[in-house]
Image 1: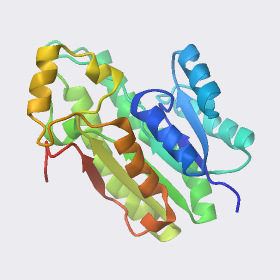
Image 2 (image 1 turned 45 degrees about the horizontal axis):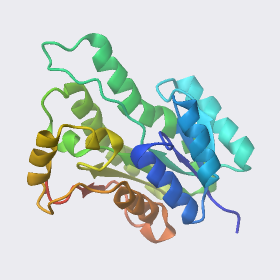
Image 3 (image 1 turned 30 degrees about the horizontal axis):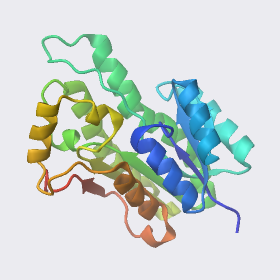
Image 4 (image 1 turned 90 degrees about the vertical axis):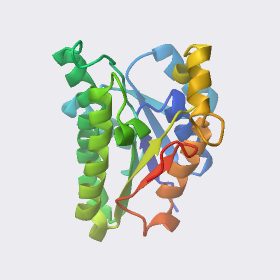
Length: 242
């Protein structure tokens, strides 16, 4: 059987790198996209044997062309899409400018449409697909200084449910994962006193690991998860329960 192709946006760093690595170990051909840090991407590709592709996921045309390049290089259509890439441009509403708002909405939410639109026709034709959107606990809870980020991540939940309804009859599932505080470089860089408060608010008493998010992605991508669609899996150590 030909290996299925998985695309992971923002797949060379943080949670994305863990997802890319886990998907490769699970037997997929993996393409990891990135927007900056060529040095990091090249080192990641060399170390893990994963193809990397650079494009701006906030640009619709770039996404369409990027997916074409992935298919050409890896020799097939994209079966699994993991919309993981995201940015922050934090600031209280009374200090936030329009660019801080639009940059985050474009990259974190609109890119889910851009990337999904670039693969959906092929998935429908082949009657198989997995779209997995990485949202955030802050899209469920809201967060001070993150009206842009929280709005984008909350929007992913509605996007996921609507697309799941549209595609279920074509063998395509669409699900979301909402991570809590995960031990990425960005999170671990916060001040010690802030980190202490964060951990105190997590019932299991620790940060999550990127690999814990990756394992959920691998599960949702599998044939065995074909009856799960339109759902959100919260992985936050009990910090937020619905």
